[in-house]
Length: 233
Image 1 (cartoon, one colour):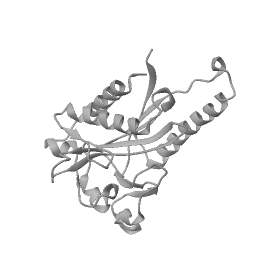
Image 2 (cartoon, one colour):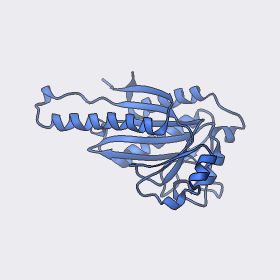
Image 3 (cartoon, rainbow, N blue to C red):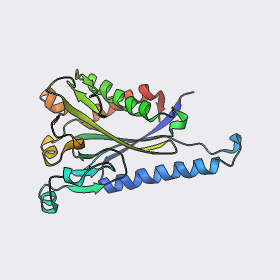
């Protein structure tokens, strides 16, 4: 039998609220794993898997390895752009979330999949590449960096999807941000992912038209189910 993955659509939600919800699910899994250590296999509690889909208001988030200087706005500038800023506990540098961007937070126990972070990150990239491929957009990998890129081997290399995750005892949180109909001008106020010489892209900019957001969500969920071999519930 395939593992079940609970799909949770959060709609438009404040970043802090979604972060708190992730932390609740994440902490609950860690607590169950701690409890299960002292129990026989038949008495162990099951650990569920969730995929959260959300759109955030304008927000900049800085990962553990990021530099404060990569945010190019002061408090007044953030207010002028109706944006907020958080330093958070995922890996990676600074990125932007906002309307028209598909943000996905898988809360998984990788011990039930594969205990390999490299495999997990590459699998997330595969999901995104197959999703945008449904619209004829060819994604690829840029050597040395995570995420999904367009024309990565050319001077026109540009990033269409950022990634940053946190894991503890093989439980995951945070995830990916795919630019669908994203307002790319907001990326001008940061050094995206700490990379100062590469552009960002969106599906709508590549195709010259706004995309049906829910349709992209559906494609992403379908591809996630295929890549991770799960049943969506």
